[in-house]
Length: 397
Ligand SMILES: Nc1ncnc2c1ncn2[C@@H]1O[C@H](COP(=O)(O)OP(=O)(O)OP(=O)(O)O)[C@@H](O)[C@H]1O
Ligand SMILES: [Mg+2]
Image (cartoon, rainbow, N blue to C red; front, side):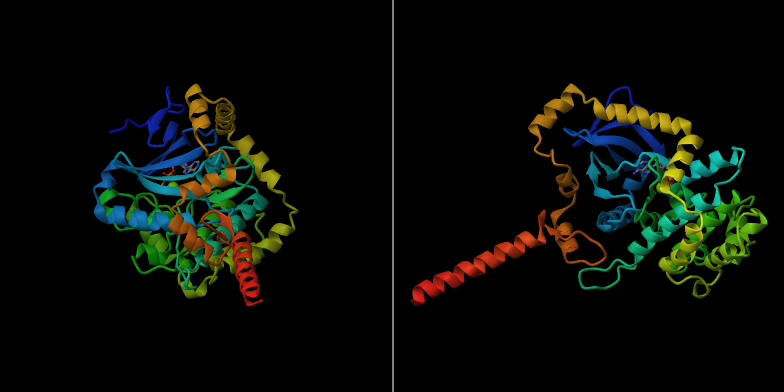
């Protein structure tokens, strides 16, 4: 079995199917994330490799693939792009766009040890609105017959929100949380996750989009106060606190939070789903005017993240240098490869049957079929029809 890199950068790129892994970029409860690139390309991707112990669990694997196929369909600026889900040398992996930046948990930690102790309100609001926009898009996704896919992220938490060094905000881990939840006790993936779950989720009840709204409100509360909302000495205690959902207004910890903002966050944190915002868009709609009062620009988030996390920023610079230089092996592969067009790049990783499905779906999904824009097909059909008409006319005359 392949020996995956355990450092960043790896002393040598490690071949992994049609990719090479350049180093381990992060570690999580059930997977490790690697900076990688497809052979013959300079562009980076992130490869998330599911830990080997999970590959034995058939139930997990089935659900992982099923959910991974859903993740491939998500096309929104605030959600990480998933290119491919598969298996190489016995390891299940997800190939996604590499987001050069820091996850929100890292940013909150850096804030806690800075002078200001917490994120400024407009930065927190901007992140919140982007999370809600990404969620709403996914919640609204339908299949080709217009039926709701009932997607629920289930794992909205600071470690699954990535803030890029250009100030973009991207949701990570859409899809795999459900696969993991079935095995929570066996593999311990719930550890540390309870504090961002909804009351219905800790009870093990069926979930809908309103569960994600609660989790997002927990994240917003934490960004505004600089403190964990539900914390206890044991997982059991945290679970009990989440179940009760008795929370104080963020303004009690941060005087810059207005009573309007308090109301919005507290509505998201209602214990009963029917008392919360019913859609992520409704919550975003209430937050946007408050954000607009600050005349906030995305570049402010970019500057803050670069200042707060200088080590990660420096590493990002190293990575960009790596992207400019390509190894002789890569140069040779690149010449052989026809995949030079950046537009083609994403398509190649997507199973064509999924692309076909996407072309008939609503919700901003790709309107391409087999890589051709719809109007080319229309023109082809129209010219075909004209040809037939002309032939019939000629024969009739
Ligand atoms: N597409 C990506 N681009 C760049 N970094 C990523 C990407 N996906 C994940 N990461 C980073 O890799 C690290 C590990 O991610 P992972 O999702 O495995 O763990 P986690 O979110 O910390 O925990 P969990 O197991 O609960 O999801 C995190 O710091 C995350 O921000
Ligand atoms: Mg994650």
